[in-house]
Amino acid sequence: MLGITPWPILSALLFIVLIVAALYLVRATAHNAIQVSTRALHRGFKVASKAVSRSETKLAARNRDVLLAQGREAKERVIEREFDRINETVRKDLANYSSLHRALSESIDRIEKDHQEAVDVPPDPPGWVKAVEAVAEMDAKEGRAHIGSILSDIHKSLIKAHKEAMAAYHAASAKRHKLLRHMRPEWRQIQQNLAAVGKNVDSLLSRSVTIDRLMQEYEDIVRGRDRAVSVLSSSSLVNFFVSAFVLAIAIGGATINFSLIARPMAEMVGGTNLIGGFRTADIAALVIIMVEISMGLFLMESLRITRLFPVIGALPDRTRVRMIWITFTILFLLASVEAGLAYMREVLLHDELATSALLRGGADAATATNEYLWITTAAQMGMGFILPFALTFVAIPLETFVHSLRTIVGLIAIALMRALALILRLLGSAFLYLGVLLKHVYDVPIFVPLWLEERIERRAAEAAGIPGRVGS
Image (cartoon, rainbow, N blue to C red; front, side):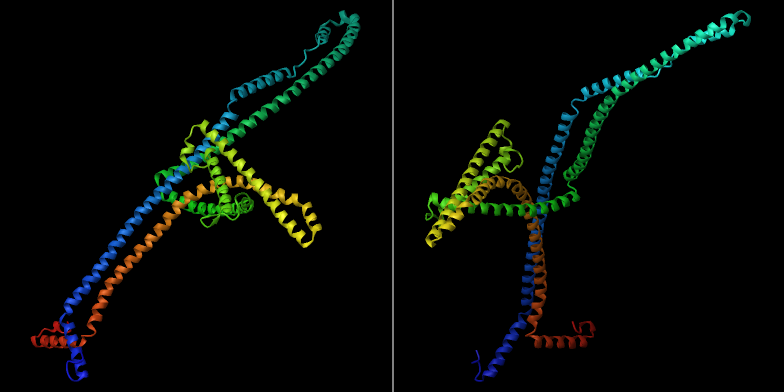
């Protein structure tokens, strides 16, 4: 291209002038193309951002529905359990209310009867009182001869009546005290019965308060209030991390269980056989552990402690009870097998240690090791038997983890989609301003003709007397 003229510098200048002229001539078209392209990209990213925002809204609504459904189901289970407890309390403690009422009525009747019999009845006035009154009314002249004998008889009667009255009073007091002693156990029995009834009533009242609170929370969940959603979200986060921690502990227990049975399994199925690049013994030990966990899951489902498999929970009670015994029997047999494998592992380890000691010439050390073999053997057999039953309870944190994972994944997806919508919106705005920037960059190489054009337009405006054209 520099060969247009014999002089390269002149050719280069001529080439630059041609390019600038071409850029100047197509300036309007280029600006239009830049503007159309950047606006198209801006609209495209804006539409994509709105689509992602709509998807985020739908996902948030879906996540909210799932969260409310899970919360409603969990709250229904809690309320059902509280009603079962109240039913059990009423059936167990208040079912004999009629007999209790009859016993209390009989006790009260006996107490009233004894109380009436224990009333202190005043004694009848003695007969000598009337005799004294008769003597007092006698004429003095007529009764002088008889007053002495009459008073002597009155004195004797008075002493006799006093003795009889004291004896009767002592007998009546003893009888009253005896009746009062008989009343004391009746009062204690009534007090105990009333205390038991009061305790049962207080328990029912406290449970009714709990049910009222649970029903209020359930009503908030059914109505889909924001406060209920917030509480359920925070509860799902807590349940997720707690269940994940418990599952990590269960994985550690399964690892220990695997180490207990992997070595003796190698003696049973062969330690050199491979399946897909893995040892057959390791695969067999892993299968045993997985079967134990599966039996534990089925056992928990049959007991209706977890609800991961609705089909098992919907079985008839008779079939479900049979399934409980079958799964427990299989789990017990597998635990027994693991205990035997743990014993076999200890025996193999001891044989290797004894062989190594004999090869080194340490027969005494081998004998001393054999004396304490039962301790480690019993410990490993106990671990091999207990760990399968411990892994049974993995079903509880697993159910919590699965249900809370749906909420966590939904929250993470919402956050990612919200960030994506923001990024797309920012990219759309960036392309919009990028078009303005590209226009100015395009005008940089042709600033000379643009300057000349501006000068010409200014002079034409000044000649025409149009000051507004200046600088336009």
